[in-house]
Amino acid sequence: MKNESTIIDVPAETSSAMKGKAPLIGMAKDHTTSASGGYKRGLSIFDFLLRLAAIIAASVAAGTMFTSDETLPFFTQFLQFEAGYDDLPTYQFFVIAMSMVSGYLVLSLPISVVTIVRPLATAPRLLLLVLDTAALAFNMAAASSAAAISYLAHNGNQNTNWLPICQQFGDFCLKSSGAVVSSFVAVVFFTILVVLSGVALKRH
Image (tube, rainbow, N blue to C red; front, side):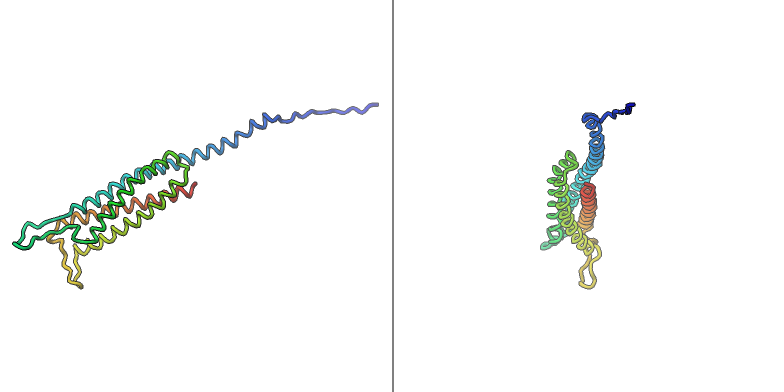
């Protein structure tokens, strides 16, 4: 009596069938990359809009301070009472610094556009982070020093017998104070820009 054996053939998966499963992983990775790219592109667009707003704030600060001259309506034969930003070195520094900050922001716009076109690129964001941090420190120095002088102009200092001049030069003080406020608005925009760049680099 012959032993009968049953042979069950199990079809092996062909290479083409195995290849058919491989794209599933690739598709998942592509989906994750696409979602990350869309998130970063949104941050880049917000970055660009913030730069436009910071340009306006810094330009208004520099322009307002530059045009803050005031001449009193009364004068003598030898004296004419006038106040201007160029009478105070701190205000001169303020005008120069805010003008440079405005120029930097304009030059940084093309780099911001690059981050919109290539949201996953690291180099442009890192460059903006470094330059924005330096500009933030420069802007803060100008705003803080000008704020100190504006405080003295409004309140004076009894210990040093510095009299307040804003009672006489009201328009000058009003414009200079408005320029200082605008410069601090630019500081806020810069701070947000630095935070945005840090968040985008962290999620890279």
